[in-house]
Image (cartoon, rainbow, N blue to C red; front, side, top):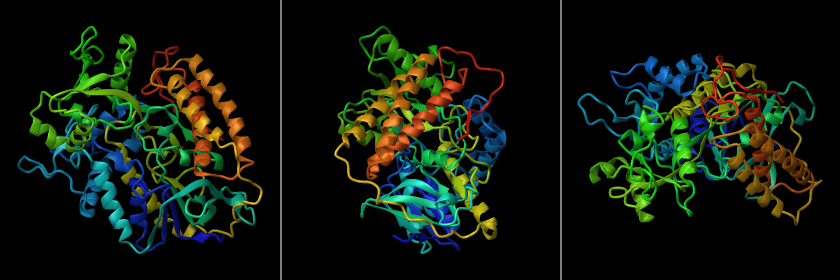
Amino acid sequence: MPTEIYDVVIIGSGAAGLTAAINLAQDKSVLVLAKGAINGGSTSWAQGGIAAVLDAGDTFESHVHDTMIAGAGLNNRETVEFVVSNAPGAIDRLATLGVPFNAGADFGERWHLTQEGGHSHRRIVHVDDATGAAVQAALTRAAEANPNITLMPDMVAIDLITSRNAEKYSGDGHVWGVYAFNKATGHVDAFAGRATILATGGAGRTYLFSTAPRGATGDGIAMAWRAGCRVSNMEMNQFHPTCLYNLEVKNFLITEAMRGEGGLLKLPPGVPGGGKRFMDRHDKRGELAPRDVVARAIDHEIKRLGLDYVHLDISHKPPEFIKEHFPTIYARLLDLDIDITKEPIPVVPAQHYTCGGVIIDLNGCTDLPGLYAAGEVSESGLHGANRLASNSLLECFVFGEAAARHIDANWDSLPPPPPIRPWDESRVTDSDEEVIVKHNWAEIRRFMWDYVGIVRTTKRLERAHHRVNLLAQEVDEYYGNFRVTPDLIELRNLLEVARLIVRSALYRKESRGLHYVLDYPDMLPLARDTVLIP
């Protein structure tokens, strides 16, 4: 198939990707590739909201301070200030696009603001408890209405097209686009442009329990690493404290905002202290402590008492208050015979956010010319060792816009793509051993959960390192000899990302933020990023 040429190729159709596309499409042709449906990424799943200083009593400095405290000092202050100062403008632009943020009830309050763990003020704008879905819908409408934007679903990115894939090799590492598996045809297509933006999200599916959608397999991080980009702080995986415990529904998140509005964590009946709160024994901030603190506290109580879950209880609030603030959660749990106006919710921690990723600057630029990144795929310096609640969507908007601005400003210096070699499909055959894909996928997620989870030890990490290297050899051999499939592409990326996480965790000889290792329980005086170089 001939290479399809656009001005800009964007991989990922969530908040970061569509924000960049909308900002670029005034005078450029933009292709947006989605692995599945256009709205199938993590953005649609976000419940809580978006953090921004919008209240008269709040300040930028307070938002910066809260972000740095949650990030355990590993944040880049310049990045934090950049994102926080751009937050109110991003909210205004979303409202203009039609995001129906909940209106304020008090005189002079434009929007209703809620408070979440780690925040010292009410600064979370939201659309009930389904903010992400509303944002995704508004961005998708705007993208669909723009004739310069081509939305292409069901395209599974395999590898970035670099200068070594050009018919005449230049050797500068320039990124020209991506090879992607077309689910409709079963073949691999090449898409090229002057600039390429990674907006592929995180790597939550590296773990057995995760709130991330099925497609969160670290594709952008793995592709960038293979192309030659540095990655940073991959050991910092955030575990959301409150995922619904249900044997059939494995990744339904109970938003942080429920604790912000008075939800209490309690031990279940039948154990010592059953029915009573426990967070006050772990942190003076109680249920509003940062996520890493709350997740470790729940993990401790579950292991100490041999529990499957703890309870999150908001039933002491008036029923109408609960239904008004949490209509999605109320309806979903009622379908599972849990009435949250009358009874508590069984919850467990689950992997929720990849704080590390591809290193970028304030313009979204990576190490490679022509390649940008925005959102969860990146490591901008915003989150540090632990992401503050509701800073994730915010990062997508700010860096999606920043990447678009930089591409616009430097357009004349971005050369058009050279002739690209098509993907070679002649050397591979079908396989009758695809069971290896399913088996290895399950094995990765299990040992990552057991050995590289909320609480770590050096011995567990070494075991994980040994296993991931053995699996990588097996999958590399398989990948080199058989036709690519979406599952094989994802397995290859999962292994790459798992290996990066384990290597990074072994390098950090301290406990900081999300990286809690029993062998090194103290935090070192100087915060340093863990940077891996290909």
